[in-house]
Image (tube, rainbow, N blue to C red):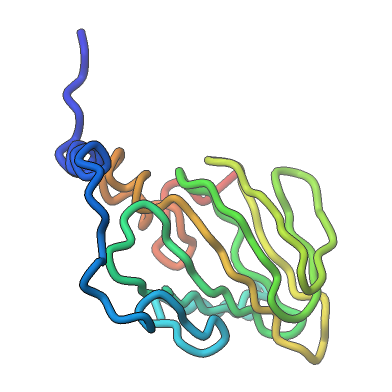
Length: 167
């Protein structure tokens, strides 16, 4: 038996199939942003016992549907929580240095590094500097994955006591 296509996913399919350009009425400055200063805070998490101290800002662009660009800022010597989620992520390190855990492996990152995190794999980023903030641009397919699965993201964050947090 075939499952029905979720309405939000069908809407994305219909928009893509129509082949009509989006955003033709937007001003030129709508397509750019200052990645180091224009974000809208989505959430913050601090847990001194676990060395966690970070914020996540969403970069808002008009008509964006499947991608979800976010700025992650991690305090010196701290990390974000170990977590997983249904969306894929690309991390582009804009400032600082650190390491990214992907599954059981830690990878060193520095300004300009790009790391890929597959769906549902546990991951975490650690700022190895004791003085500089780590800033990374996380580009995800959260819009597509949400259209497919619904609102799944709250189950994946430690700050929300997420069901999917523990490895």
